[in-house]
Image 1: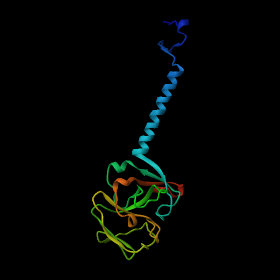
Image 2: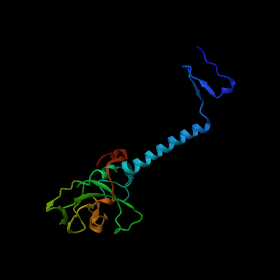
Image 3: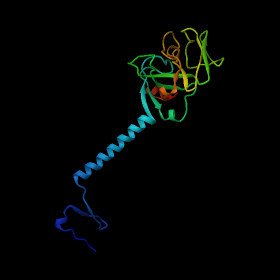
Image 4: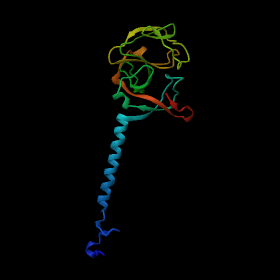
Length: 199
């Protein structure tokens, strides 16, 4: 059996199975590409806003755990699932009290959560009266004692891992912060490769 396609149907094609179908016009092809690009952009925006992103470390407040210039994989989805836990490294919006417009985002470690009492004595960190072992810090706290400070519901107390004198602007300066300022949890160092790994 054969099919005949007349001249008036020059824009039509016959498939190997004998079915006749229309060739897509340039406008139709362009619209298909445009839709695909828009869908891809929408997916990227949603993932970036609610899923994950990459952040670059600026400054030295998290030394020696994080070094300036390192790339971090930031898990943003976790903020919709659970409150931050002690020991986690978080990316947070700069509290208004800090007023450093050149650094709209900060990276700090959560050291106390809702219901905790936090303080430092003689260079050591205490939470709920217990001395905290901090293997990530390379020196005792050099800024003097603080607290005790009560952490209220929906709040956290954050510090930089760099405990040298005046090395970190954190909750010792701007106080407890609402967890609504937390933008995500830093889960991995991605770059440079020799420092890559889970946090």
